[in-house]
Image (cartoon, rainbow, N blue to C red):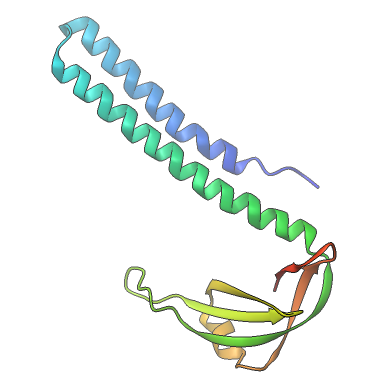
Length: 141
């Protein structure tokens, strides 16, 4: 299977912004001298770049976990829909839809599903799933 490169390339964005900004600040300091204002600007710039890097690592972790499940869940079976609905948490102007599926005694709630899925399946319906044969707690639909 081909290795995805996009998430790592996305990490280059905060590095390039951080390096470019830091270079501009250093050149400005060399031209106009050192001041406390320079320390504040450099600190703010490093904090901003660090926050962008942390956000990247958070999303990259979720991406890697989802990718791992997609690779390992190879056996198909039938799960049971336990619940569908809208989340109580409002994100922007909408409440995201979710679906809770039970398989082999384990329940998993999948958030941010489409409204089409939410209306297609009702409580007690069968749903096709893929599960990990080595760990039946891990499944996707």
